[in-house]
Image (cartoon, rainbow, N blue to C red; front, side, top):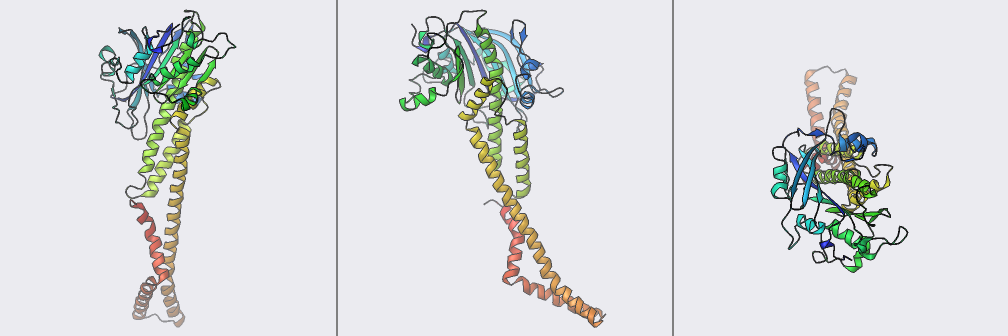
Length: 425
């Protein structure tokens, strides 16, 4: 019996690493997602698109003539890891057209948790495996640059997706039979893999442990998933029988459809981050109405293009996306953006109404004395130029006097109100 997940090497172990990058140029790689194969099944863009709603498929795989994803097959072995391929997914936003996500696909032939701890830079962890032959700077040279942890939208460390199936001796995660409940240790192992940590790294308080473990997604009796802020994990609950086992299919889904659901969540998070920044700057400088209109256009584009909570009729992908959104509070944050944008829109409309009312008031103040004077001259039949000029002068004087009254000052204040609110508060 093996109780310590730090020493466990599963029967089947896969690792996917997602990094935020900046495209230097359009890749000259093959177009589409990395096409894993299982028997006669090839998970290319056409196959995967059948799982997703059309709008989500366009975001993840591009459209004819407008590619957004590229892949390259490689084979690099080092330190118990084998790199099989790389992908680049363009994640351009309104401000950052060169942003993208790089995806590295590995299989692992040594204990998986220490490797995850190293990627997460946990205390006393082993050296980071994303160095040497697996350094992103080397693998993506001339095509993309890794964005630093301080860049906008960049995560502090790469996002990891771990897949592990147990052997017969890994009883802490095995169901006694398909109808039996899971041992208590199963979700603890799942949490370790998703959080890239041990209890020494992050002592999980007993009061919140049940809530954390309760977020696990039961894909079937055979395996579960857990999505956290900086990582996700898939863990089997029966012994893996090797080639031909169901886990061939499970691993394929974890590396393709389920990965894509999490990538879409990353795109949503980045766009919501940008909308939040744009919203915080709406009162900077002049032309409030123009900036609010631009913000509303960007919100509408995000909602129609990226904001999905129902991806597919296939349940687990939806549940994974919802779990990612919940970890980053995306529905709450987007609702707050919509509410604040609506408030700003009402403010602009109020200012425009005030300016229109002020303009009408000025026309009234100007027009009443002038109209009265011209009307009197017309009734008297007076066509003298001198008298006309005197009438105009008296009208101007009467207008100036009217503007000094409380009503006149209110009219002028209404005209100035819109410009005044354009300035930073």
